[in-house]
Amino acid sequence: MEWVVILAVLLMTVLCLLKVNVILSILISTIAAGLMAGLGFTDSVELLVAGMGDSANTALSYILLGAFAVAISYTGITKILVNFIIRVLTGKKTMMLFALAGVACLSQNVVPVHIAFIPILIPPLLKVFDQMRLDRRAVAVALTFGLKAPYVMIPAGFGLLFQTLILDGLNSNGGEITLHEVTLSMLIPGSGMIIGLLIGILFTYRKDKTSKDPMKEEKIKTEDLVEEVTFSKQHVMTIIAIILALIVQIITQDLILGALTGIIAMFVLVALPFKKLDSVMAGGISMMGMISFIIFAAAGFANVLQETGAVSELVEVSVSALGDNKPLIAFVLLLLGLVITIGIGTSFGTIPIVAALFVPICLATGFSPLATAALVGTAGALGDAGSPASDSTLGPTSGLNADGKHDHIWDTCVPTFLHYNIPLFIFGWIAAMVL
Image (cartoon, rainbow, N blue to C red):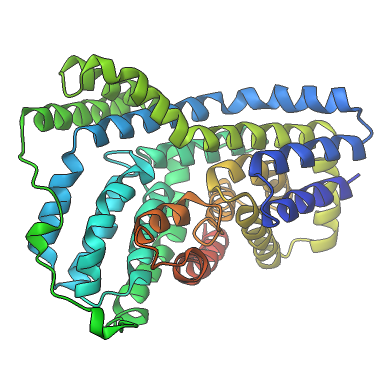
């Protein structure tokens, strides 16, 4: 029976790599797992749907955060940020890259708008990048760091979502851990990403980018690149709404209440007219709905594997084959997590799956709860930066390729994979050994 898990995960990964829709890949693999375990179509679907309920909180959080991001973008406040970056940082490559990484970090925790800021912020800066001879691969590395590292290490915004998924994954599969301990367990893996950022900006892509057609180069008047936006009362109200959302989120430790507070405050404070409410919610669903349903499907997939008993048998076989060789076990689990996440394209959707697989194995082989959380979290995050289907790569490309001069695979996926997944793998393995 243990082979059911391996074949189901393999099928899901292959389908995703073949660019079959992620949700369909998970659903097909789930039903296939049920059939291989001796269940019928109806029983497999019932177990799938029963498991989806466990991720309802996370999915609703995603939808509301997406709506909040759309509401903020409607006010035009990000254009003020663009103007500031152009005015202050033009000609200062290293500072520009670190500033972009910082802005991306804020989008995950303080102002949880995820990738919604990139199509607004980056396209107006492309001519500035070209004028500065800035390698766009360095920009992709900086943006992906900001989209990924904060949720790995900081339990706020999307970080609260990610670490809550790890918490629920451990506690629902026999582990016992607190949110604070999950945060501590992810600091070591996350520090590997900081090293990757420094290597990418200060060494790999430090040289000037040579233009393919020097004759077409021209000096850009930076003051003409973005329409001038005057800071107004509307923007003050927007900032107040953001602060209120952050305060409620910190006090309640609930992302749904935080996002809902922000959305309501935007309209109560008249930062946006009430007639925009429908379009704000529709925009949030459009932006984050796909990820929400991936998480639903992944939770159902994990439930089918658990309920059929395939996971427990895989644990027994794995423990007997690998023995108590913790370094080897940690290496194999992280490698498996890398393959799964590259296939699915979302670390959030991967967590319920890898938790169902990894936690019983870790408990049976004597890993501590902190080490187990580090393995589950790192395995979930691995591959996200290099996956062609990941928001962490699709987001940067959506902005950097606005003029058709940036390749998604070679200019975003490959650089981010090399600079983040390798150190994340190494530091995640170290965390499993020392915690």
